[in-house]
Amino acid sequence: MDRIKWEDKNRQHYLYIDLSHTDRTELVNIMKNASQEINESHLDDIIVITNVKDISFDKSVTKAFAEVSKTNKDHIALSAIYGAGPWVKVAIEAVGKMVDRDFYVFKSENDLKRWLNEQ
Image 1 (cartoon, rainbow, N blue to C red):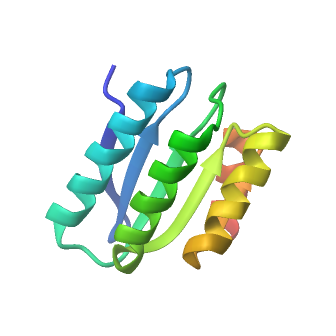
Image 2: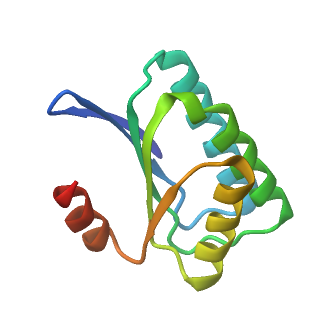
């Protein structure tokens, strides 16, 4: 399964990252690979959509998420995350405050899609 996928729609660059059902080590590796792809793309208007269903945040995941988020800040137009339970949502929002980024967090992919269509 491809965990990182690019798509261009309506002159907009989308990066889909699937972190669902991964252990901490795999999750951190996927995030680092996505970060590298973002930096190598030389794009400055990327919409990142991330599936975090059934992941757990611990210190290592929080640290990696913060590092990647800070490193790629200038390349990202919008970050939307779905599949987050209440604790993961709190952790993601805390990381956003630490790195001065807005993460739009949704319970389901359908909620995210509805919200994106309204933007």
